[in-house]
Amino acid sequence: MLGYAMAIAVQIGIIMILTISVNLQYGFTGLINFGVVAFYAVGAYASALLAIAGVPVPLALLAAALIGALAAIPLGAVAVRLRAEYLAIVTLGFAEVVRLVAQNERWLTGGSSGLGGIPRPTGDWPAPFDALGYVALTGFVLLIVILVIRRIVASPYGRILQAIRDNLEAVGAIGKNANRFKLQILAIGGGIAAEAGALQAHYIGYVSPEQMVSHQTFIAWMAMIIGGAGRLAGSVIGAAVVMLLFEGSRFMRDVLPGVSEVEMASIRLALVGLALILFTVYRPQGLAGDYNSR
Amino acid sequence: MILSAERIVVTFDGFRAVDDASLAVEEGAIAGLVGPNGAGKSSLFGAIAGSLRATSGRVVLEGHDISRDPDFMRARRGLARTFQVPREFSHLTVVENLSAAVPGQAGERLGSLFFRPGAVRADERRVAERVAEVIEVVGLRAVADLAAGRLSGGQRKLLELGRALLTEPRILLLDEPFGGVNPVLIEQLIGILRGLSARGITLLVVEHNLGALSQLADTLHVMDRGRIIASGPPAEVLADPEVQSAYLGTIAP
Image (tube, rainbow over all chains, first blue to last red; front, top):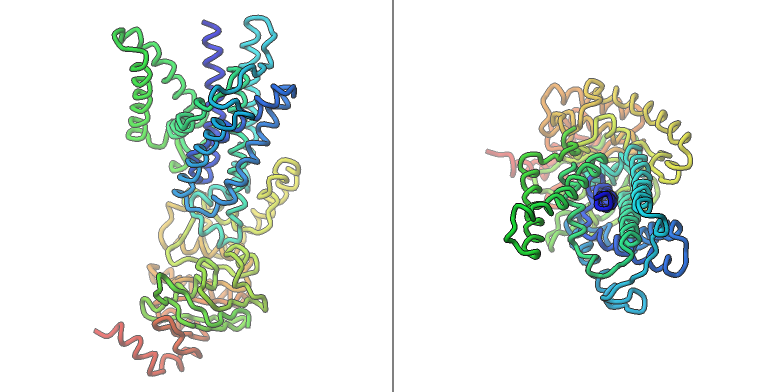
């Protein structure tokens, strides 16, 4: 049971990090990135490949964030000029491109069979401590992400981000280069999503293209909406709620004995969808209250 | 000449909204740009401010050709503007809206944010002082901490004016500053604009309300169907038969 709880804790931490990435981009800056899973994938593969090649895991984790940020630059160079809805489509396409590259570039990614044998930094530790250690590592990364993002959003820099979200054209009129801020936010958001992917890769010990589907993106989007867009605390709360709904619904197994495993997976997804609908109807500002509630 | 727009053409899907219009504004002037609905005033204005791309023509600000500069570069060179429908940052407070407009802030650079926190704090004090001055000029102290989305229409116009002032403009372009504003506030606005002019800021005002504008402007440019049809002192321009027919065509019963 402790092992299960630790595993859930790691997953919750990873989704919290991914949700903060979405929130920084959409909640604070108004950038609709439907392709965060692409950066999650880049981080997962980058960190996995480096660690397999013998780079110490802490360094690989750091490098994953950097590579994730760099991956956003070519995308951003094209996409920052686009209006919000077009950016959404381009990022969705970008995620598909990354997934297809992972699937087809066998020499690098192992193709559809993926990469195995990714070292876990706490792998050699005795029984309860390996899991506990990884929870602590995830918590530590989450804490750093929260501190960095809080510094960014609660600053003159963050003021411009929210100005971009509220009224892009007026940002140019007051002499600020909105494209610079947007590009930097896509990069920072990419780096954070990559970090989430890297943590996942070292935890499971295995990466494959089938983990890199838009399902991951939309879990983070749901968590942001349920928690409250434009509120950092909202991402933490929202991610916990969504993951607990997902995991908690496993126990519906006992209530619905006649349902097959495959059907069960769909039912759980439907349940989370229902929760999202109820939230947008009855509490559109999210649990923490979003930027509209000031 | 602080600003000149030379032979500007703006086309939308083949329609020439601005058709070879030229206009020059003298330093220190209060210039008005008037004309009936659909004359192309806002398009010409957008082409000057850089929010619209002109199909052809040149915009020169203090001797620099700024035709290829994006809007934010024009603003940094001293050309500030307001919008016909105010574009406030609705979820930021009045103070935050104004603070965002102060140029050259250390806290807007990521490097300084993490590695020079002392410089960021010091710069925030400078920003707060500048904002405190301007909030008095535009008379929004009472609503300083209110989200801008909750302001009245007139207050939003004042907020935009304040934001434009904080960019330290040499010339201020105002798009229908009196539109939808109550008469008391119009008087207040005229007072504020005269004060800015006295401080050496050149004004170019697009306006529908000829009454308010002729009280204020020392030069009028009249636009009709994409062209400037007359320029000069208000009394002279309004006596021009071509101008009268352009206006009579639209306001006659």
